Image 1 (cartoon, rainbow, N blue to C red):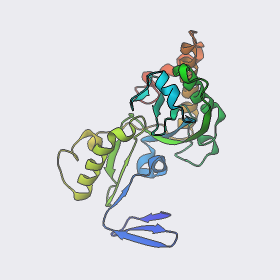
Image 2: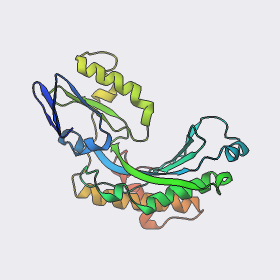
Image 3: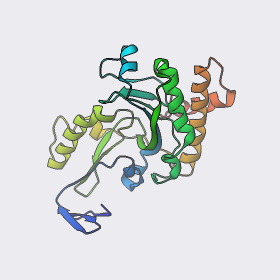
Length: 256
Protein backbone atom coordinates (compact mmCIF):
# COMPACT_ATOMS: atom_id res chain seq x y z
CA UNK A 1 0.00 0.00 0.00
CA UNK A 2 1.37 3.41 -0.99
CA UNK A 3 -1.72 5.41 -0.12
CA UNK A 4 -5.29 5.26 1.15
CA UNK A 5 -8.26 7.35 0.05
CA UNK A 6 -10.97 7.48 2.70
CA UNK A 7 -13.87 7.29 0.26
CA UNK A 8 -16.59 6.26 0.10
CA UNK A 9 -15.63 3.84 -1.21
CA UNK A 10 -12.17 3.36 0.29
CA UNK A 11 -9.34 3.06 -2.21
CA UNK A 12 -6.11 1.30 -1.28
CA UNK A 13 -3.48 2.51 -3.73
CA UNK A 14 -0.58 0.24 -4.71
CA UNK A 15 2.37 0.78 -7.07
CA UNK A 16 0.47 -0.88 -9.94
CA UNK A 17 -3.17 -0.16 -9.24
CA UNK A 18 -5.81 0.15 -6.57
CA UNK A 19 -8.22 -1.93 -4.51
CA UNK A 20 -11.69 -0.60 -3.85
CA UNK A 21 -13.49 -1.71 -0.69
CA UNK A 22 -16.31 -0.60 1.57
CA UNK A 23 -14.18 -1.22 4.68
CA UNK A 24 -10.43 -1.20 5.26
CA UNK A 25 -8.63 -2.53 8.34
CA UNK A 26 -5.19 -1.13 9.13
CA UNK A 27 -3.10 -3.40 11.34
CA UNK A 28 0.39 -2.32 10.37
CA UNK A 29 2.09 -2.38 13.77
CA UNK A 30 4.39 0.56 14.50
CA UNK A 31 3.71 2.20 11.11
CA UNK A 32 0.33 3.35 12.43
CA UNK A 33 2.07 5.62 14.94
CA UNK A 34 2.61 8.20 12.17
CA UNK A 35 -1.13 8.54 11.50
CA UNK A 36 -2.86 11.61 12.92
CA UNK A 37 -5.63 9.60 14.58
CA UNK A 38 -3.11 7.37 16.39
CA UNK A 39 -0.06 9.57 17.00
CA UNK A 40 -1.27 11.18 20.24
CA UNK A 41 -1.77 7.80 21.92
CA UNK A 42 1.18 5.74 20.65
CA UNK A 43 4.94 6.05 20.76
CA UNK A 44 7.56 4.04 18.91
CA UNK A 45 10.15 2.02 20.81
CA UNK A 46 12.36 -0.72 19.40
CA UNK A 47 13.06 -4.27 20.44
CA UNK A 48 16.15 -6.38 19.75
CA UNK A 49 16.75 -10.11 19.74
CA UNK A 50 19.53 -12.65 19.38
CA UNK A 51 19.13 -16.21 18.09
CA UNK A 52 21.41 -19.15 18.84
CA UNK A 53 22.49 -21.95 16.59
CA UNK A 54 20.50 -25.20 17.07
CA UNK A 55 21.42 -26.82 20.38
CA UNK A 56 19.10 -29.77 21.18
CA UNK A 57 21.59 -31.51 23.48
CA UNK A 58 22.22 -28.45 25.64
CA UNK A 59 18.49 -27.77 25.95
CA UNK A 60 18.01 -31.35 27.11
CA UNK A 61 20.85 -30.95 29.61
CA UNK A 62 19.20 -27.94 31.29
CA UNK A 63 15.78 -29.64 31.29
CA UNK A 64 14.06 -27.31 28.84
CA UNK A 65 11.95 -29.97 27.17
CA UNK A 66 8.68 -28.12 26.64
CA UNK A 67 7.66 -25.21 24.43
CA UNK A 68 7.31 -22.62 27.18
CA UNK A 69 7.94 -18.96 26.55
CA UNK A 70 9.35 -16.80 29.35
CA UNK A 71 9.80 -13.17 30.28
CA UNK A 72 11.03 -11.25 33.29
CA UNK A 73 9.37 -8.30 35.05
CA UNK A 74 11.63 -5.46 33.97
CA UNK A 75 10.13 -2.43 32.29
CA UNK A 76 12.41 -3.18 29.32
CA UNK A 77 11.51 -6.83 29.40
CA UNK A 78 13.63 -9.83 28.45
CA UNK A 79 11.60 -12.45 26.57
CA UNK A 80 12.85 -15.84 25.44
CA UNK A 81 11.65 -19.09 23.96
CA UNK A 82 12.71 -22.10 21.90
CA UNK A 83 12.14 -22.55 18.19
CA UNK A 84 11.02 -25.77 16.44
CA UNK A 85 14.60 -26.45 15.34
CA UNK A 86 15.94 -26.15 18.92
CA UNK A 87 17.38 -22.69 18.77
CA UNK A 88 16.82 -20.15 21.55
CA UNK A 89 15.62 -16.61 20.93
CA UNK A 90 16.39 -14.00 23.58
CA UNK A 91 14.93 -10.53 23.17
CA UNK A 92 15.24 -7.24 24.99
CA UNK A 93 12.63 -4.51 24.64
CA UNK A 94 15.20 -1.83 25.45
CA UNK A 95 15.91 -0.27 22.06
CA UNK A 96 15.90 3.45 21.23
CA UNK A 97 12.77 5.55 20.84
CA UNK A 98 11.51 6.79 17.46
CA UNK A 99 10.81 10.46 16.80
CA UNK A 100 7.28 11.57 15.93
CA UNK A 101 6.07 8.11 14.98
CA UNK A 102 8.75 7.51 12.37
CA UNK A 103 9.82 3.90 11.93
CA UNK A 104 12.58 4.36 9.35
CA UNK A 105 15.38 5.65 11.62
CA UNK A 106 18.46 3.36 11.39
CA UNK A 107 18.82 3.23 15.18
CA UNK A 108 15.50 1.35 15.40
CA UNK A 109 16.92 -1.57 13.42
CA UNK A 110 20.67 -1.30 13.99
CA UNK A 111 21.74 -0.42 17.53
CA UNK A 112 24.70 -2.35 18.92
CA UNK A 113 23.95 -1.38 22.53
CA UNK A 114 20.44 -2.82 22.38
CA UNK A 115 21.61 -6.02 20.70
CA UNK A 116 24.29 -6.25 23.38
CA UNK A 117 21.65 -6.10 26.12
CA UNK A 118 19.80 -9.00 24.52
CA UNK A 119 23.08 -10.93 24.38
CA UNK A 120 23.86 -10.09 28.02
CA UNK A 121 20.36 -11.19 29.04
CA UNK A 122 20.89 -14.51 27.29
CA UNK A 123 24.09 -15.23 29.21
CA UNK A 124 22.69 -14.05 32.56
CA UNK A 125 19.31 -15.76 32.41
CA UNK A 126 20.42 -18.97 30.67
CA UNK A 127 23.94 -19.60 31.96
CA UNK A 128 23.71 -23.28 31.02
CA UNK A 129 23.65 -22.22 27.36
CA UNK A 130 26.39 -19.65 27.65
CA UNK A 131 28.76 -21.31 25.19
CA UNK A 132 26.19 -21.90 22.45
CA UNK A 133 27.13 -19.77 19.39
CA UNK A 134 24.81 -16.95 18.35
CA UNK A 135 23.64 -17.11 14.74
CA UNK A 136 21.97 -13.73 14.33
CA UNK A 137 20.88 -10.51 16.00
CA UNK A 138 18.32 -8.00 14.75
CA UNK A 139 15.96 -5.27 15.88
CA UNK A 140 12.85 -3.43 14.80
CA UNK A 141 10.27 -0.82 15.83
CA UNK A 142 7.32 -1.62 18.10
CA UNK A 143 4.25 0.48 18.91
CA UNK A 144 3.54 1.14 22.57
CA UNK A 145 0.19 2.64 23.55
CA UNK A 146 -0.09 5.32 26.19
CA UNK A 147 -1.67 2.92 28.69
CA UNK A 148 0.23 -0.21 27.56
CA UNK A 149 -2.87 -2.01 26.20
CA UNK A 150 -4.03 -2.64 22.63
CA UNK A 151 -6.88 -0.55 21.25
CA UNK A 152 -9.24 -0.79 18.27
CA UNK A 153 -11.15 2.06 16.67
CA UNK A 154 -12.87 3.37 13.55
CA UNK A 155 -11.54 6.62 12.10
CA UNK A 156 -14.39 9.12 12.59
CA UNK A 157 -16.47 9.74 9.47
CA UNK A 158 -14.93 6.80 7.58
CA UNK A 159 -15.10 3.03 7.23
CA UNK A 160 -11.40 2.71 8.05
CA UNK A 161 -10.75 0.62 11.16
CA UNK A 162 -7.47 -0.01 12.92
CA UNK A 163 -5.82 -1.91 15.74
CA UNK A 164 -2.52 -1.16 17.40
CA UNK A 165 -0.61 -1.05 20.69
CA UNK A 166 0.11 -4.78 20.86
CA UNK A 167 3.62 -4.42 22.32
CA UNK A 168 4.25 -6.58 25.36
CA UNK A 169 1.19 -8.71 24.57
CA UNK A 170 1.91 -10.00 21.06
CA UNK A 171 -0.28 -12.83 19.83
CA UNK A 172 -2.07 -13.10 23.18
CA UNK A 173 -4.43 -10.29 22.20
CA UNK A 174 -4.92 -11.09 18.52
CA UNK A 175 -8.05 -13.20 18.99
CA UNK A 176 -9.74 -10.38 20.90
CA UNK A 177 -8.45 -7.91 18.32
CA UNK A 178 -9.94 -9.87 15.45
CA UNK A 179 -13.32 -10.07 17.15
CA UNK A 180 -13.32 -6.36 17.99
CA UNK A 181 -12.37 -5.35 14.45
CA UNK A 182 -15.00 -7.68 12.95
CA UNK A 183 -17.69 -6.06 15.09
CA UNK A 184 -16.52 -2.58 14.10
CA UNK A 185 -16.67 -3.53 10.42
CA UNK A 186 -20.21 -4.89 10.82
CA UNK A 187 -21.32 -1.93 12.91
CA UNK A 188 -22.46 -4.32 15.63
CA UNK A 189 -22.92 -3.15 19.19
CA UNK A 190 -22.07 -6.38 20.96
CA UNK A 191 -19.83 -7.93 23.60
CA UNK A 192 -16.74 -7.11 21.50
CA UNK A 193 -17.35 -3.57 20.29
CA UNK A 194 -18.36 -2.46 23.80
CA UNK A 195 -15.17 -3.74 25.45
CA UNK A 196 -12.74 -1.19 26.89
CA UNK A 197 -10.39 -2.21 24.05
CA UNK A 198 -12.76 -0.29 21.76
CA UNK A 199 -14.30 2.32 24.06
CA UNK A 200 -11.90 3.47 26.77
CA UNK A 201 -10.45 6.96 26.89
CA UNK A 202 -6.79 6.88 25.93
CA UNK A 203 -4.20 9.04 27.70
CA UNK A 204 -2.62 11.68 25.48
CA UNK A 205 1.18 11.66 25.21
CA UNK A 206 3.23 14.88 25.07
CA UNK A 207 3.80 16.41 21.66
CA UNK A 208 7.18 16.41 19.95
CA UNK A 209 9.97 17.19 20.61
CA UNK A 210 9.07 16.84 24.29
CA UNK A 211 7.96 13.22 23.86
CA UNK A 212 11.25 12.18 22.29
CA UNK A 213 13.51 14.17 24.61
CA UNK A 214 11.62 13.23 27.76
CA UNK A 215 11.15 9.61 26.68
CA UNK A 216 14.84 9.20 25.88
CA UNK A 217 15.83 10.65 29.27
CA UNK A 218 13.37 8.38 31.13
CA UNK A 219 14.59 5.39 29.10
CA UNK A 220 18.14 6.12 30.22
CA UNK A 221 17.00 6.38 33.84
CA UNK A 222 15.07 3.12 33.73
CA UNK A 223 17.89 1.22 32.04
CA UNK A 224 20.40 2.58 34.55
CA UNK A 225 18.21 1.50 37.47
CA UNK A 226 17.51 -1.96 36.10
CA UNK A 227 21.13 -2.65 35.19
CA UNK A 228 22.35 -1.39 38.58
CA UNK A 229 19.86 -3.63 40.40
CA UNK A 230 20.99 -6.67 38.40
CA UNK A 231 24.54 -6.00 39.64
CA UNK A 232 23.46 -5.40 43.24
CA UNK A 233 24.25 -1.69 43.14
CA UNK A 234 22.27 1.48 43.78
CA UNK A 235 21.50 3.52 40.68
CA UNK A 236 22.54 7.20 40.52
CA UNK A 237 20.11 9.69 42.04
CA UNK A 238 19.42 11.31 38.67
CA UNK A 239 18.55 7.92 37.13
CA UNK A 240 16.20 7.09 39.99
CA UNK A 241 14.50 10.47 39.67
CA UNK A 242 13.95 10.09 35.94
CA UNK A 243 12.70 6.51 36.38
CA UNK A 244 10.12 7.71 38.92
CA UNK A 245 8.88 10.59 36.76
CA UNK A 246 6.20 8.75 34.68
CA UNK A 247 4.43 7.46 37.80
CA UNK A 248 4.53 10.91 39.39
CA UNK A 249 2.90 12.34 36.26
CA UNK A 250 0.18 9.69 36.29
CA UNK A 251 1.41 7.90 33.17
CA UNK A 252 1.31 4.14 32.65
CA UNK A 253 4.02 4.05 30.01
CA UNK A 254 7.64 3.96 31.11
CA UNK A 255 6.75 2.94 34.68
CA UNK A 256 8.47 0.35 36.85
